[in-house]
Length: 89
Image 1 (cartoon, helix red, strand yellow):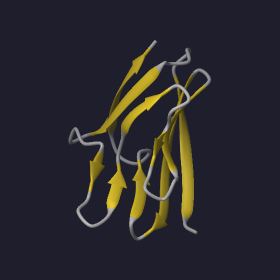
Image 2 (cartoon, one colour):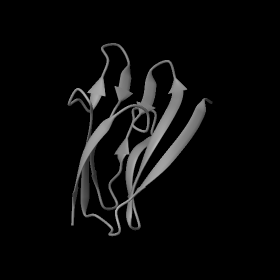
Image 3 (cartoon, helix red, strand yellow):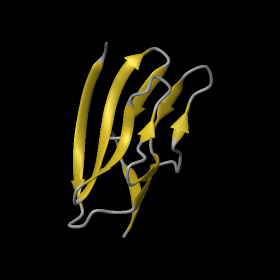
Image 4 (cartoon, helix red, strand yellow):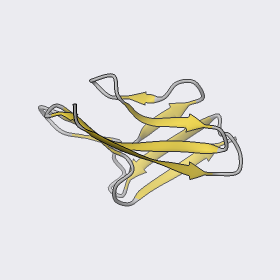
């Protein structure tokens, strides 16, 4: 179980790849658990967490970021806080 919210970032084009970092330049934090805060998503190859939950994916005309708490061991916080991204056409 858990809660899940998502946000679509509209770019006006469908990127081939998107690279997302949090404001500290990280894509993942944690020691005994994982908190995904970004990553490299390719077209048809999203960023997937340890519990097989999507953190970041390319969609038509942009990309979608997720905030998901699946378990105590797997969290996605890509759509919360400040993030930076590079989108490749």
